[in-house]
Length: 265
Image (cartoon, rainbow, N blue to C red):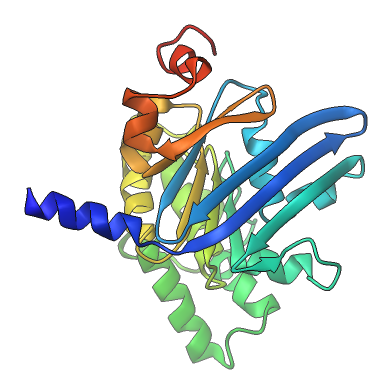
């Protein structure tokens, strides 16, 4: 029992990494996200759940300004990373995305070698002073993505030649190679089989010791397995946010309970 209390105390002391206040997102005339407030902690996996089209991926993309790439998108409100406004005009979105890495729904390795997939970010951001330093970053990133043992003898082979689960871990290695502080994952297991999904989930649990991880998932079981905090979105609103155990066993809002018990969704 003492061990459990120690774990709970440890969870409570995590520092705030991202603070979002009164965030609205518009796609043209469509109001996709409405007045979202959320605090995302460091060294924690935060899951965004909710029905399809509820805004969870849209909000995730606000956290590294991916919505900037959509002409008709407008983001209002405030999102701070380590206390700094990421939408400040002085912030370079490319540099921000080095700090806030992203892994997409379908594995999308570049049509390059495994080595070059991982080395790409460090090269463009000037993170390695020479080939030896780059080799070290590539190895470290592949190890963090639990892919080194499978890939070390084929680094010069195309990343597209890996299995689906390995490709997704390669994309995770590519995301961590720029030494980010936050990792965003948009349904990272939806294209994977159950065995590859289990490997990625195990990896997510390991990654939270280094990063703040935010995962969008359509699987409530996955959210329950991998996250410590859960946010439930519905029709563009953040309905409820709290400890994962509490959200799944004793939600405060009847809409959350309806979704979790399968009455809406």
